[in-house]
Length: 80
Image (tube, rainbow, N blue to C red; front, side, top):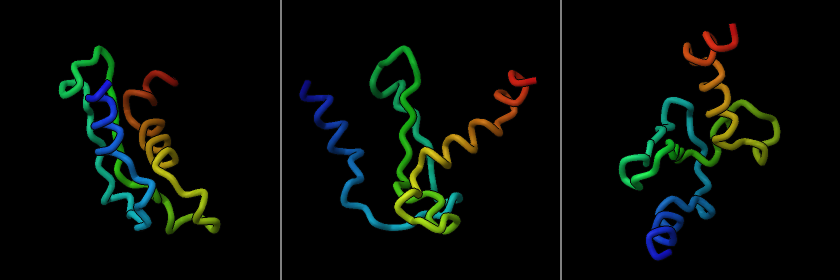
């Protein structure tokens, strides 16, 4: 439980207000660090796509992650 609190605290972005360019967003896989069976992807970029959307409050890393995953060669092959 203590480890989980540390992880949450480490990756908390509630007080971050910067806007990130898509080139600045890094994806980190914590699978090895956490010893999980599946992948745990972490994105630091709470305002991804902030420069592209009219309503900046809608900007978030989920849009960036979705766009990049759906356009990845692996997903595109699976969709075909």
